[in-house]
Each structure stands twice: as structure tokens, then as C-alpha cells.
Image (cartoon, rainbow, N blue to C red):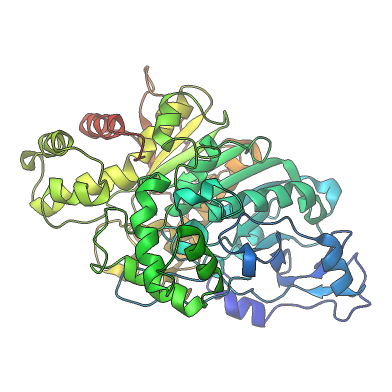
Length: 547
């Protein structure tokens, strides 16, 4: 079953019930009281409800504004008493470029939907723990269809999983100081979309068999960065009880003032370069998606010479009040258990010098800061300049999130950390690069341009390792401990503590040797002191405008 691709799963789904007269007792129909949805029975024990709206469409005047809660009365009226089909993946949110020279623009603005994966026949009294997945893609691109969860439910039909679509790139993160006036626009609507989805889940997940008081948020890359933001942001109380942050994207969190040059460039190239900022925003609300897509893609190239070239979350002063690392250092975060980690070799670039690479990634670093980075990441400690620069950028942008969150949560709640150490077999390199675990956990997926992906077959050994990973993750979702429901062959995952005898222990996640399917290759290790020291240095450089 693990070899089946999501499209094939849907095409061969067992539709036990068809037509509007179907009983709500059917294993693939859910009654939300305001409407009934029919999902796909993609396994005998798993249902995928696809494209469930959680907010009003952010169209017209709602562009660049916070999401509006779903008008459930409207949804019910439109259904007219019929069971609504939820067996097809919805349109994904408008995409930006992946940075590989490709053009974005595919997708729809009417995309504030979720996919819900639940055990067949689940009912409100089941009160199953819930996993909410926030996809990655640099806040620029990403399509939840590319990371399916049918097989997770098939393996462990005692949880409910929700995957969230949220606005991306300029449509999700356009910023100008004028947005301090809500009549003009709102900061971070893409992040607010995620929050609105969590609020919808609190109200309606019981109908799918879920427990709104036991919700774990999980994400990778920008999804991991989003998890970090939810952990420190205002207004998140009661929306989740745990977090799993994979390869936390520690990109700068600039101020709206610092994003003004990007706003001006984007406006001009979208055909809205004249008049006041208020007039430009009004014009941008009338611009076509094609004009928006071309302008946001162009801003990420050398055509724009500003310091901040990407549309990312900003410090809005109300919900995101400072760089996340500063909140972690000050103890201002949700006191919940977490899992956090990264891959062994992920990086943000290996060319140039350390100071050149770091000044590009973190424009607010001073000359003294850059000199210190050159010293801490001295070439003497590496086998090549590529490894030197790759480690400096990789630790600062992704890998040191393990220390930033592990230290904060390990000292106050519970934390488990990891190093993912299994290469993506389709990349033909021994290096374990960014998103390698996605290939393993989601049926051999490799993200392509404009919301596409390619699924490749998995060997029995890879399938066995994927099962091991899924078991650790869902054990944490079910019990706030990755060990409670782990596979019997998997080693105990010891907690991470910042200090003391058991300090700095982390799990190395890798598949078993050879072609084995019944032996785990994972093991515990102590974090190397040189890495601990480098990450302490990186974290010390967190400032008002950088994570």
C-alpha cells in the first residue's frame, strides 16, 4: 500500500456511499451540523476529507487582509441539504518561484481550505488526538497535496490529521508601515490564515473524531518556522498543546519599515507604482494574479537590490512582537512539549565567503558580527571552503533551531531533539540535505515547480524506516512522548536537557542496515561540543530584526 501514489489512492478509493441520500453513519461522511461532507475511503480504515473551507475566500477587497471566519450559514445554504463531495484535492494557494529560475503563478486565491485525514467511522466521542501540519516552501510556495497523510492514518488509525493551505508570497506577507491602519491592510495574513485554521479546528474537529484539547502543530522548513512563530506569538492560547518543528526556517523577521523598499518595487512592477501607499494598495487589490505573480518573482532576482528580497513574516508589534529567538531567550513562549531537529547537512549556500553569505542572509549583521562569524567558522575547522560556508549558513538558518528551541523547552517543559541522517536516495549524494525526511515520510515526494511533485517508489527498507518515523511522531501526538507508542524495534528516544548528566542527547534518525526491514538504524548521540558552541554563538546574534 505504501507504494501507491496519492492520485492512485484517490482513483481507486472505495466509495461505499454515493448520492445525497447517504446516511451520516457511513464511514466516509462527516456531519458538521451546518453541512455534511463525503470523503474518500482511501484505505479500509482511513478517510481523506479534501478541501474543507475554514475561512471566507480572501478575494477582492479581502486581498492583503486577515482571514474572515467562515460563514457556516452560507455553506449550509449552498449545500441545500445535500452531502457535499470532498473527495478531490482543492486548488492550492498562488505559488511563487522556487528560486530555480522558474515562474510561479499557478494556483488560486480562493484557497483557505484544509484536508482532514481521519479513521473510517470516527465519531465525536472518540476524542482522538490531532496533528495539524503546516507545509514548508519558504513562505513562498507549497501544496499540501504533495505531503499526503492517508498512509499515516492507515498505520495508526487512532489520530486525526489536518493539513492547512495558507496564503503565500506577497498575497500572504506583503508589508508596509501603512498596514498599521487596518483600513489599509493587515500584517502577516498568511500566518493569520494558519491561526484561523486552528480556530476552526477547535470548533469542528470533534465531528471527525478529534479532540480539540489535544492538538499538536507540526511543520517542516517554513512550516517549522511557522510552528516556532505560533509558540511565541500572541493570541494562540488554547489552540494547541504540543509542537513538532522540523528544520526550523530561522529567516530574519524584519520590520514593516524594512520591507518598504520591497513593497515599492513590487507595486511598480505589478503596475501600481504611482500615488500614495494607500493608492498603491488599492491598485494592487485590482491587479490580476498574473501581474502579482510576475512582480513577486522578479523581486527575488537581481532586478531588485534591496536587503529584504522575499515576502516573509514581519514583526507587526501585536501578534509577532519580536524576533522569535528573543522571545525564546526571554521565556516568552507557550509552555508545551516539543520535538525539534534538522537534517545533518542542510544549508543555505556553499559559495563565497562566510561573511558574504551571512550578510546576504541576515542584512542587519554588523561588520563586527561578520568578523566574528569568520572567526567562529574558521576554515581551520573544516575540510573545504564549501563545507565551511555551508555549515555557517546551514546552522544559522536551519540546524541551530534545534538548540534555540531545545534549550528553551528542555529547561521548562519537555523536549526531544533529533538529527535526521538518511539521504534522499533520488538526489545521488551522501549528504543529508534539506527536506530529506519529507521524501521518506510522504511516499517518496520531491517538490517541483508551481505546486507539483514527483513521487518515486520506495524499497521495503525505506518503507520500514518511514513506519518508524511515523510511529515516533504519532506517539508524541497521542501521549506527548515519542516513546509510548514507538515501534518495538525502535530505540528509546531520551529527552533533551540543556544542562546536567543527560544534557544534549539527541536521536539520530536513519534507516536500518542493508535491506533489513526489522532492525532500526536509529541511535542516541551527544551533541558535539563544537556544534553546541557554534549554535550558542549564532543564537547570541539574534536581534530585533533577525531570528
